[in-house]
Image (cartoon, rainbow, N blue to C red; front, side, top):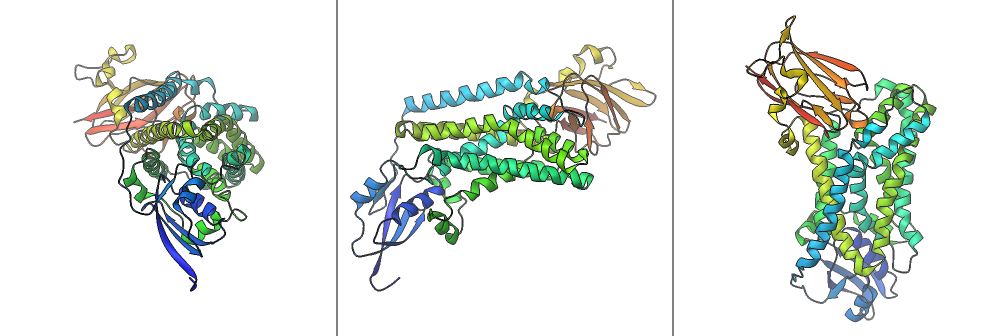
Length: 465
């Protein structure tokens, strides 16, 4: 700071995310006498270095009127503007979308399409469409919603809609690029790449926790501003200079990173690219799959841009998006707990009486609900489909080998394999119309969970002494 340069701290109300910092710095640096700006969204402060006369509050509030940022000379008390009617409307819209999403999954849409290593390439595009309206919408769509507010604020009011939708297009461009390149790598490397069942769920839970914090920031809770993930000062300064960065590389990298997020559909496509043994085939499989997810992900992203252009709707949209982000985060965490074999909300829908309530097993079980023993092995049978498992609860005896016969009644994507980290190694691959057999010996008493790759469908095997 030179001799003629002065400093002044303004207090800013209305900042809800890390990108507010970039937006405010970018706009203020355009003013002639402003030399530097340092904004802290967590503290709600803006430190300005200037020459000559400092900008007035009236001027600053006029500049940021449409962004709804308000500048003050002193810290301001938080005003409770809770409106019950507006809250109920916002909650209702969010719940309707959530109910619609759950309904689509309950219809078993993933069973409409099945792929294998011999499928023609266009099938992977259709497979991607199925992913886009189910698990990918939950995992990746939730990320897009949580970031759309931040991306939108990187651009000024004078920028065109075309410029404001560019981060969403760049996000998907990064997604397509990484899927193509890494799909080719999978085709070359083959079995040398191992997508660990331990790493995947932990990564998904970590991402979901970040989404929860972002959701509460979107609700406007000040305490969660302290947990914002901010970039180093030299990077934000570089981004604030619109001639350099303007936030375009970050959406590309985020889109590319989604290749590693665990989704049953994605893992299926990755597995088929892996066994293709060809860089070209592996790349085409993954690119066509990503193209299939594109319509739904673009719809989610572009709708957020359209709403954000209307000031009277942007706040409501932000709250609705926050509800969806929070739901998707909890939705993903719940299913990853299933994969890890931990108790979850899914257990509430698993009824132990189901083990004796199906025609397939009813005549075979004894009074304790234990299966018959044939040739020294406990025989349990189950039907598997994209809607769930029937039955989904079994009782077996410890120390006696189990022969598990699973008839595939129409699985696909996430549901075409069964895992149980606590009972056996690896997975049980399923093929529609066929019966898969898994033999293992339960050693310790307890309740052990089994599920599909993503945990969206689960069940319990109770081991008794």
